[in-house]
Image 1 (spheres, one colour):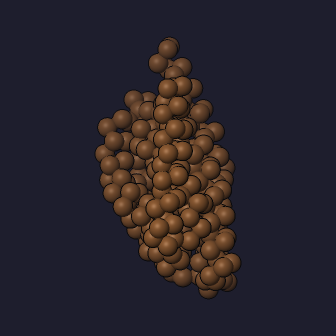
Image 2 (cartoon, rainbow, N blue to C red; image 1 turned 90 degrees about the vertical axis):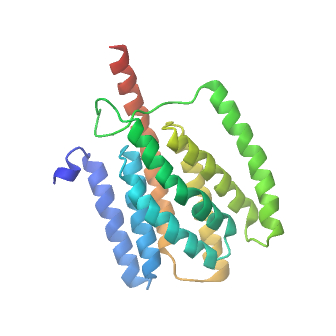
Image 3 (cartoon, rainbow, N blue to C red; image 1 turned 30 degrees about the vertical axis):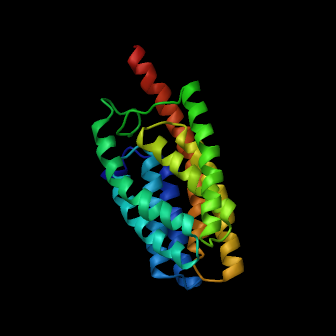
Length: 232
């Protein structure tokens, strides 16, 4: 298939496997249609990000909108605000910024030029996380949110990861890994305490975790190759 000509065997198998798992859960676990759409669009979005494909933002627009609606039903207000007020509009910003910074030559199918954080960048990033994390947790507690500290951590890490993603920093994936681990815990607790049949949310975040690990590996490799090309 022409669309997948620059994809590795692992990437193709990963895409097919996760799609089939979601279809299976939709029928066997009587999952909601909205949950299925959210999971599938989210999967396509993150896989395309790991590949450095600008088209990831089209699926991101769908995923952030539907996910915010589902999270609202579980009282995960941090997730709602993050997706509706932050992620959704930034899909359009990201589409613009990535289009402006296309790679002159693709290394293995990626369409953008990637970067890495400096020591100063790391210091600013980590200090910002601590301050925002504490303040946002107290805000969520005041408005009656559930699991506020995990909710705040996932929200704060997600904001930082999204900004790093817009700027095309490889380290975004380290923050996404943390986000995915905490999100799995968040949804597991929400489903146990409140019930519900949105099992696809757990599957989605588990798949995101695997993808973020691969994304860090792939972007690190692409950065080294792009840097080598510049020095040549």
